[in-house]
Length: 355
Ligand SMILES: *Cc1c(COP(=O)(O)O)cnc(C)c1O
Image (cartoon, rainbow, N blue to C red; front, side, top):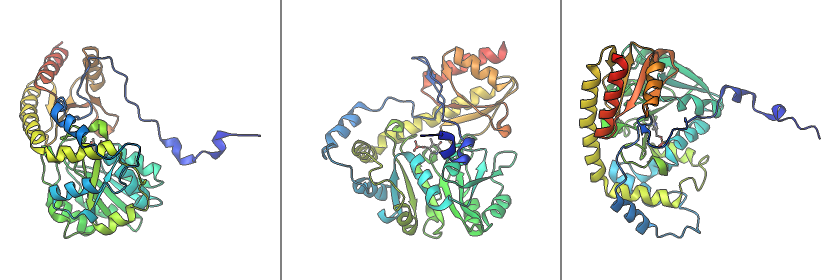
């Protein structure tokens, strides 16, 4: 046998590198992944375990009917227009496998890096359309790209990760009008600000909205996201979706969290107050420019090399996020943490920039 792994490998995968999460020492203050910083409420966790009625020896409900019912009640979207996934990451990949393969995927950059990566995995060509100087959408350029015959999907994030600004529904409506592609609006951070384009769903069969339980709802470790869209879009996605994508525990957890949403909404209110305080204090530091944020993180540009600040903070036990995009040169992103975490971060970065 003359087996050669290289000879059977998909050539186009050489553009991809495995997702790398730095290994961090215990006790590091984690302000890098936009997670909910509070401890998950113990009584809600107990309720989730109580709700786990279906035995775990059986496969989960492939349509997550109880959960999609609860999401329907929460959003006002009929269940036929809802699909839950193993994180919105899975939903993005399924969208691109269903509609993107062999065509172009238009992405408003800089943004969440996974859109480009999933496009490549799906065998689609990512087409990057740059945002304007303040990271606003270049609607004319997006319309030109989305109007091409090869365009299959347009993805934009609002509020945008990592820049923090949101698109208006007016801009999204313009894009929906000019696009021959499906327009996917990722609202992962919508609980923290920005205007949801949910109201456009009735008028535009080419609109798809993504939401997640990973950020405001504190469930990043349980992997639940969902899509809101036209029932015809969901019907096509169901051909591609793995039947048992969302495990029984996560389905129960998301149902419980929605039933207890008021507690998460009050956590969000705290995070918003911390964000304003953090942004205000960060802006007073020498050589730091803060971008306005409608999310649970703050992007800032530094006069010192961003890499140096990132590494100095890590030495002090604080992990934030750095970037490789040329448009984000010398930018860093910090997640809004608990009050004390934010204070420690400010104290350490103040020392670094004043040194
Ligand atoms: C965090 C994040 C998500 C959430 O992904 P999950 O797979 O649901 O955890 C989706 N989109 C963006 C832009 C994000 O930042």
